[in-house]
Image (cartoon, rainbow, N blue to C red):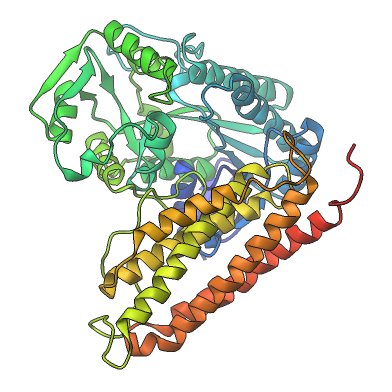
Length: 539
């Protein structure tokens, strides 16, 4: 039996129960991979506003609970306390970056969310709290001298992210003062990159109008950066290892985490593969970014640039000496991997990290039985193509509907499961695309386009309400979604029946049939919730 000695004693293999908020995000997904491989960890409970696809790796390795930290304070703290009770440690990773323009929501989710987690940790008697702080919490500097954890955490006043990270640090100061029995570890990382964040990063900081796909096709026309920019970064897996070590060693106080190399303009040009480097005064870049933000061309405000230019370089001596942490990738390697992921729209089936594109064709894209996948002469390829294209069209419309439901019904008890269902339907839609490509059958894209338009028109139902949501909306949309899932299930069953003939593995499609049963069960519970309220007088 494996055991590890910590300052608090010896933890036997499988002994520790860890609860993690924000487990479905960038750092959280990497942390789950790390904890799944750690013998000392006995169980992991993930808390997320939007549940990931719990049938997919690595999310199947954890238990899950859906909770929005911005809900009514006492109710949130009560639920967190219940979820935290019996845990050996809580890792608080949850942090909202968008909507960037909703300052009140961000403050509630991030600063007050941390306060609610701290309250629940104290009330549940959890002995160890690990919190994701940031280099952004530090006061600004005007040099390249690395700062250790003693540097003031006053933040950068023009960056809302930095201001909130500094406020988060103050919340942790209060917890340490009021509850000295709780070990509080603050992990302060630099920028955090991995390929699976390739679709998320553009959504959070660039927006849909910036052509990140140019990264897929070769060099950008030119690389323009603010003069004097220098960056540190860490790969998500290396950061996850720092969190893992923090759970085992239980250090008090802050720990800086970053790869040892510092990236400057020339390094960025080399990584991007562009010889045309243009360094521009930071003030000019800031003015251009402010204009782009004000006109909604980008989703990140100029405060992010202020933080990038003013945040200190990190001295990571404590991480390496006290935690025994050693990064396996350089900052350059982490950034290269991210850029590749951005060019491909790479991601995994969770709300924050969902991919932007169809998975690339490859050996693992479809579960194959034969060396070659093709339509045999015993089957009519024209009819099969029409059938699969129709199901792709249906999956496209169904995805649009379930995504809208997951977005609109955040106040309903089943919101987390609706978000999970959306991730599953997205993956199944993409599987239809891959299947058609493998069989060399046309997708008939015009059908998917028309189905998307029809789905949006279908939202304009006369439910007796013009502005606010009608109780009938949930009821009717649940019924429509249930019908769509029943049709989808029939499609997977039909493919399973012909899989051997097509050179495919029928077990995969049988599994999709069985998963659809669970999806229908989720919608049935939503329907039961809605029909109990549909015709009642609303307060």
